[in-house]
Amino acid sequence: MRLSSFSFRFNLYFCGSDSISLFFGYIYAFFWLSFLAIPLVITFRVKNQLFFVMKKKILPGEINELKRQKLCFKDIFLEWTASVSFHGFPKIFLTKYTTIRIIVINYLKYEVVTTIKVIEKDSLPFPAVTVCNANPFVSEEGLKYVSSFLEENNLTHIYDSELNNFGEKNDQEIFSNNTFNRFMVTTLSKGLKTEKKKIFSLGLKEILISCMFNLQQCSENDWEWYYDYFYGNCHRFNTGKNLKGEKIDIKYTNNAGKYNGLMVELFTGIPNNHKTLSLTNGAHVFIDDNSFKPITQGGYDVATGFSTNLAIERIKTKLMPQPYSECIQNLDSIDSFDSEYYRKVFRSNLLYRQSDCFEAFQLSEIYKNCSCDEMGNNLVYENNNTCDTFTEQLCAITITQKLLETNFKQKNKLFCPLECESIRYKVIKSENNYPSESYGNDLSKTSKIRSLFENRSNISNEELRKNVLAVSVYYEYSEQTEISQSASISWEGLVGIIGGTLGLFLGMSFLSFVEFFDLFLQIIFKKS
Image (cartoon, rainbow, N blue to C red):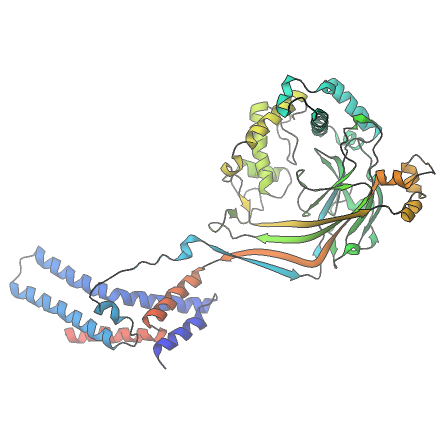
C-alpha cells in the first residue's frame, strides 16, 4: 500500500474532536512542520558559517572547505528528497523558482456554524402568562384617581405650547390627548403604595370567570400580582410564585394542543365614563420565560367578544461566547461583570437581560438631568426620589426621547454585555366569536356573571360580548426549537487541516517521519 494512500485514511480516521485524535494530530503536524524546516536549518547553518568566516581572518583553504560542506549538505538533501515516498515534496526544491505561499486559515476569523434542531419533547416548561386589563382604571376608586389627577395637573386642556412636540393641534388631538393622559396617569401611579394601586382596578376574583390548566381547574393561588407602568394591575400565571409571593413549582405540560395549556375566561367590563382613559376594550397578554418580568413594549392585545388562541413555540438560543460573538458566558451573579448598569439589574432582584441593562443606563441619564428615578421599568429605585410629579415626568420623557435618537445601545454594549443563552416564544394568534348564543345564555345565568352585572337577570349576549373574552395559551407541537452555534474551525480541526493538507498535496503520511532518521544518518555519516 502506498504511504500517500495511508495518509488519506489516517486523516479520515484520526481527525476528530477526542483527545486521541488531538494527540496524534499534534505529533503529525509537529513532524511535518519540523521536516519543512530542515532545508531552512541547513541553509541557515552554512550561511552562518560563511558569515563567521567573513568576520575572521582565515586561510583560503578553509573557505573552500566550507563551500565543499555546503555543497555536500545540498547534495545529500536533494538526493534524499528524490528517494522519499512522498513524491510531491521534491518538486518544491527541483523547481527553478522558489515561491513561499502563506495560507491564512479561517480559524482566526472566528466564524461559526449555526445549527437549528427541532427536538420532540416528552414535557415542556409552560411559560409565564401575564394578563392585564386594557384599561388600568375601571373601579370607582380608579375613576376618582383619574379625575383628581387630571384636574390637579390641568390635563383636561393638555394641548398647550409646552407639549407641541407631541403633534400639531388637528383632528388627531383627541387620540393624542387620551394617549398622553393615560401614559402620565398610569406611570405616575406606579409610585403609590401597593394597597392603593390594587383598588384602581378589579381584583383577580372579579376578572377571572374561569381558569383551567391541563384540563384541571387552576386557583387564585396560581397567580402572582404585578403592576405594569402602562397597564396597571396585572396578574401573572406560572412565575414560580403565588399570590402571596411564596415560591411554588413551575408547571409543565406533557402534550400539545389547546386542552393541554392555559384556558381562561375574563371579565374586563369598563364603566360608561369618558374619564377612564380607555381607548380599547379587552385585555393585554404577555408570554415570557418564567424567570423574567414582561417588557411593556411586547405582548398581544385580545379583544372582548372573541375567543383568542395563542399557539406558542419555545425557542432556545445558545450563542458562542467571545470572540465568536458579542455575548459573554456565565452572567449569573452580580460579580460576573464589572459594570454599574449590570449590577443594578441584580440589585433589582432580576435575572440578567441586556435590555434591562440598557434600561439601567437610561435611568442613570434621567437621574443626572432630572434628579429623579423614572418609573417606567422593572428596576429598583435607589435614590429615594421617583419622578412622581408632572414636571419631573416631562423631563424624563424628554431625556428618553433624546437618548432614543442617539445610538446609545451600540455605545453601551461594553457596559451591558449580551447574554449567550436565551428563551423566547414564537406566537401564532387566531380568534373566533365568543360567546356563542347558546353558551352566552348559560353563562349569563351564573352567579359569577350576575354579580359582575349588578345582579341583573336580563343580561343579553350583546352585553356579554362587550365585557367578556376568552384566551387559550398552549403549545402547538410538543417540540422545542434549539438554535446553537459552534466554531467553524476548532483547534482540533485546525491541526487536522494542517496534517490533511500536507498529506493530500505532498503525499506525506504518519509513517513518513521514519525517513527523517535516514536523512539525519546520511548527513552525520557522510560528514564524518
